[in-house]
Image (cartoon, rainbow, N blue to C red; front, side):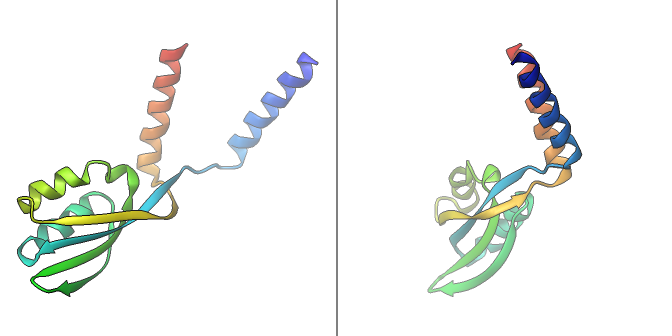
Length: 121
């Protein structure tokens, strides 16, 4: 029985390596409402966060920026937005879909996972 378990583990490991697996990350849709003078800062910040601007629309004296961004980049967005807009911006975000992680980011994630696994051993 132990031989079958070991064989299954080795087969799974080999299969995963040959299948060229990818890492998926959650992408959120964000609607950010800011005074017009902060539009450049908000759009630049989304570019830094690997985000994509979907569009902008006026809302009275404000502009609403609609964008997609990786959830991993958005965890502290409320702090960033407050800092950029002196507390005058608001946002809402919700899950949109999953996307493949870029290769450079995936390498960092894999390396960190290896380090974490070594610490556990």
